[in-house]
Amino acid sequence: MSTFTAPKARPIGPVTKGSPEQIAYMQCIEQDFTLSTEKLEEIKNHFKSEMVKGLDNEGQTLAMIPSYVEGRLTGEEKGHYLALDLGGTNLRVVLVTLEGNGKFKTVSTKARVSEELKTGRMRDLCDYIADCIDTFLAQQNLDNVTEELPLGFTFSFPVLQSKINRGVLLQWTKGFSCSGAVGKDPVLLLQDALLRKHVPVKVTALVNDTVGTLLSNAYQKPATLAGLILGTGSNGAYIENMSKIGKWKDGKTTSDEMIINMEFGAFDNERTVLPLTRFDNKLDRKSINPHKQIFEKLISGMYLGDIVRNVVTDMMDRNLLFNDTQQHTEIISAHYAFETAFMSSIEADGTVDLGVTREVLDTNLNLVNVKDEELRIIKRLVELVGTRAARLAAMSIAAIVEHTQVEEQGVDIGIDGSLYEFYPSFEERMYEALEVLLPQFKDVRRSIRLGLARDGSGVGAALTACVADRMMRQHKSL
Image (cartoon, rainbow, N blue to C red; front, side, top):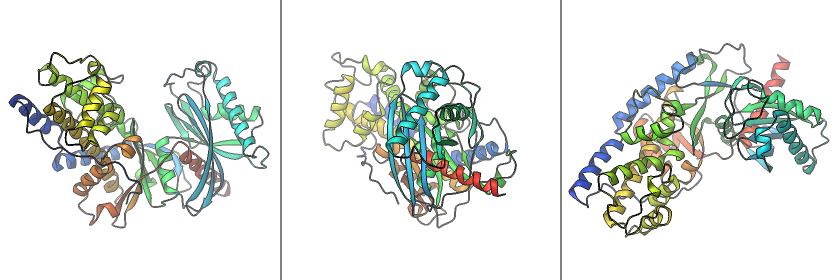
């Protein structure tokens, strides 16, 4: 059962008031955005077959990337482990002290990465990172340790990984363009800076944040099977038997299990099974990555608001919404102007006159004097798009559960991300979908235990360093 309380949605149901044209239009929208149990089943079965293809062959739509993280956590691990999170404007260093019995303490520091460092030499960036780590260790009285501290490096850029602590940077994203890095191993470049500056740290793991989410959940809940990110973007990772990873060519492992980074945002890029509406297609066409990450575009916080906006602007074009001459509609005509955060406020609006919805439209989009029936239409659109996202996210979990043949005693699923944590009734709608997709479980909520797993890039990365350290010691003893 979940350990956090998300806000509750206040459903409004299908639109029954308004002009005949508005009601007819909304009936079509209901059909477009409502996923039947049969359709969800069809999508789940296709997802499972794509998982198998990705495990057996390289270059598949579901990439199913081996993480090189072998075995499971018991919750009894102890010691000091570091995490480094580099993926944007800030650099974060985290010290995680594992105390056993699923308990840990964290302390962290943040440092800003300047534009000069983002666009200069990679050597300068690594020297800066090494200095930040050195300062942090001194503050924690760990600068004179006798053994090097293991560090997990969450490097949130496209990397082709070849070992738990080896990989090659394929390209920079997010405004970084450091020279001397593409085609090189970021672990070796950072380790070189740490050695030059005599910082007692060994980079033992290169970490994907989804894998980190799984591990941050697993330390407290050893029955964890999967970790998901459901936030601005979406992805999943789960524990797989080595015998099912047909494409594995890297020899003997220290365990018969390994975490797989699914990269499931790309699921059904071929558009075989997902019921894409014209509004989804428009969003995809206008995005920075057309025809890619199709599944992610249906379930992620970055995109949901714009799907709603596409429906609203289509209704405006047909003179079905805001055709009052007093309306100022330039703001809502801009891409991504209707934020997913607005959807959250509208979903939670339980006022009789939909005053919260009215205020969201007025304050953020300069839409004033909105009619009551128009408020109901907007609220229903938001409800349909938000519910579809939750049901599709649940489908991915159902596919993982069936693929791994989970039994009645069940598993824990760790989920990080603002959509899962803050969007009203997102988890509840996921459970409703799981109940129809997994009828083999007497009580889905007891068997498939969803829960919030915070900080995969911090705590999770430190735990990955812990697993990597254990693997290294086991390899030495083989």
